[in-house]
Image (cartoon, rainbow, N blue to C red; front, side, top):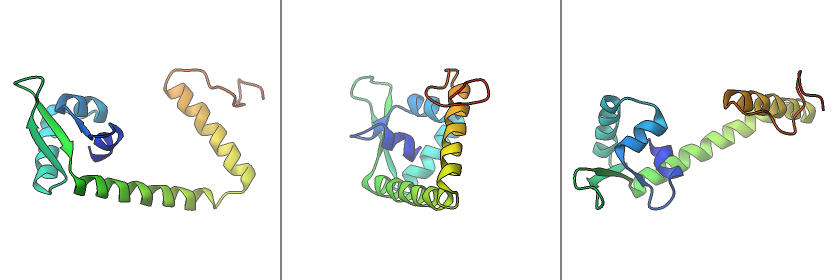
Length: 119
């Protein structure tokens, strides 16, 4: 939830339905998670200015700081793991991941060699 709100850009807010779509959770699970995040002071919920029945979920300063720290830690750990590889292995891993992601997303890989795509 926090990462989805952070990626939304300033002012770091989305409607609950958008959050559910981006995080692929049910509305029931969404409500429970939002309740906990709000209780912990990481988000706020307020009525929508556009839709009288709608709500808006916004990242608080504490929530933004937490997700920024978590992202920094995640990137540091990723770097640590990649640094265990030789430059050639890292390049091969990048190529394999790009191919996998392109296939996962349904698009042909671009610029990467693979078993059915010559270099």
